Length: 321
Image (cartoon, rainbow, N blue to C red; front, side, top):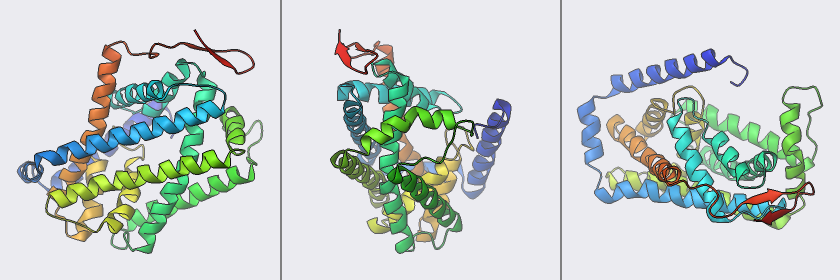
């Protein structure tokens, strides 16, 4: 949607949010939703925050590994701080922008914006196999049979991700100067090329990506179990990634409304009533709020470079000051 004018993007998000909220309001009332949330035990509210923090640390480790192979040694705790603060920025902006904020903050701690973009792109690309695996698993176990929209989302993501991985594996990007986004591709071409020469690193990144995907689904499985409406983990492992593909679409303000609608659509065919499905979607989102709250505190405390300043010289070397 980057090609749309700002007012058009904002209009789409606002209309999408209002439409999704109207759909949710039509399916349930506030009292039933409150009752479903209240039925969850207190310990269940700690699960989303705990897993989101673990997965954020997971991502920080992967980014630090990639940056090191690109010639920049940035401590994991510094990368983690950037991710936390970027998550807060993303939550405060109606149009999102968390990934942009994380990348910009990461660039400021030493590597520079170009290298930060390359590192983020490499981590995202090496995470694609994990998503392809879990979505293919969902297709194999028939997790999307009763929800065609999830089927379309899963198959579309698999097709696009597979095509992108094929291009990266071949090492030939089908963009030329003058083509749309050719400049953007050129900025991270070198980083991808460098990482392709490190098979051990690639396997490690993919392994941590798979762990993140499994933990992401485990949150919903635990919440379903805590609410007394368990679904086999094998099914949840396929359902949640497909649901997230729809939630990521930039058609609402911060995913509000879409998140709740998608959870209702995904879980109702498995015997989960709409109030419980929406409650689980909301409680799961509290993990993002917890991470954003920590990022807010880091910004309030003036957290920036974690006591280190990195400068890169023209040769790409980094020195501590």
